[in-house]
Image (tube, rainbow, N blue to C red; front, side, top):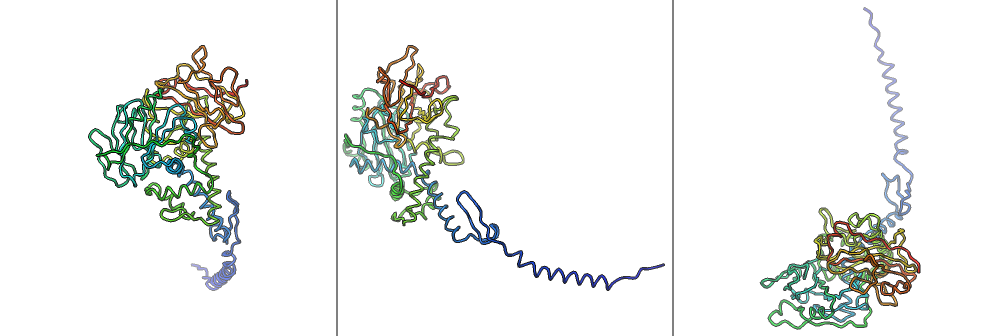
Length: 501
């Protein structure tokens, strides 16, 4: 049998030479592979540079500075949207205490055009009776609501309802005694009364007199009682503060003043678990509970720009809503203005966009404002565009035809507001609304034509609201005591249409 010789030396020699070659190659190629050129990436916030490629390198000093600025700026913009409700209420409370010289529990009556001119999207038809309570100063407060056609409630400083009063409250319009207590305060409502506990130290309280007779509204005001619970044995008489002739506004300020207002109210209120991350975002910007607000030049510049961009975001979020719940009816640009749950909570999240949308243009919430029960509460329809989809313009003229048999137990109203202040339109006529309580001209079919523009159509002055060229406007259409025809969609409000006269 023949066996081939075993070639040991030549293959081994080849293997040794190959190994040496690989080793030498690795020795020379390893440093080349480890050194990568600096990489710069184009992004929406600018160019981001890294010492090597993005995955393996560090950000350069310029990129570190850029990114920290962007972190702070983005957080400030989101903090603007988050803080709209509390800043709005803080500005109103500041007017109550500083402009009007009213104390905690004092009552201010807003019953005319000038008095309401400072309130975000006020109803121009019914009088408001309003107070703010500083529960940290006074302790729990007592409100004795009169019986009658009243709709009232108390909200905490984040504009979350504490309890409804009057027709939509537990007293059902028969009158009742309410006790409102602050964080950590012990209080017991009297027999047959109602207790509400506020998570904030400061509280908004108010009611509207729904009867169209001013004399009856005056009686309701006289019957109202407000006093500290500690003085229940000898209640002091309520104080009504006269604000006649005072021009004021609760519209949140712009620029650095917005952040000053936020910082001030943060000092007066506890921080809730829900808001701790936002407080962390604000800290590098110089806004922190327990510390003075003293931003350096760089922080102040960043905050000023963030207030501008934050408000621009708020305008977009409000005036061009992308909230599905805001849909009113196909074929119209009207929408439901208030689409959040009064608690501001959904099943898995808090309604950040919904509440920013509402509180940018409006103020307060209550269960009565979102009721689905026919005949009670209110419905708020809002619009910013005409039938053609164009923004409403103060230099142009429009007609709104309100169909006959509006589905209301009480009344309807159409009100015009300035976009800039989100308050009643400040026009020479000092008249911002038209309602079914007024003596309006009616068409033969029962419909009503309302006119909005710089001048009135001849003979239609009573159906007209004046606008101001150069200032955009929007409108609310309110249904008080909405009936089933609203809820089932059989009565639909059409759009404003451009008109000439």
